[in-house]
Length: 147
Figure (cartoon, rainbow, N blue to C red):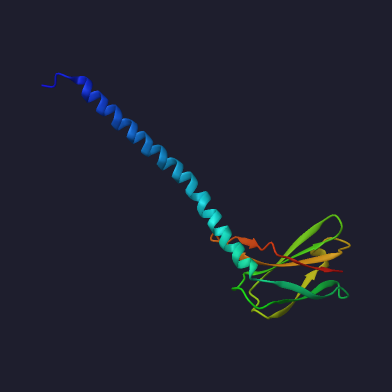
């Protein structure tokens, strides 16, 4: 028979503390893992965006639409599409065109007037990529074309 129960209760207490610490570390890791992975994905997308440069070279608004001609510089990987921001002095609207532009490629897109703000004064052009969840990630590097 066990006559000294004090020694046994200190071992059980120590084991319970160790299990609580392991459980706490597991909970903290589960919370932080998503944040760390999300930050790593964003860093990768920003790196890809830095290698992609798209700029508007001409805008014709005489046809009832904005006919925007834009080209891509050499470098960078495939993109998911091009994002346009048509803005006046107080407001702006987004217009996305899906599809890759090859490096050194050139395209023209029609943006209907009714899909934009009135009295537009500039059009900003930027590429966008798809993140790991399939959402559009608009690159922060934009080029402006003043109307």
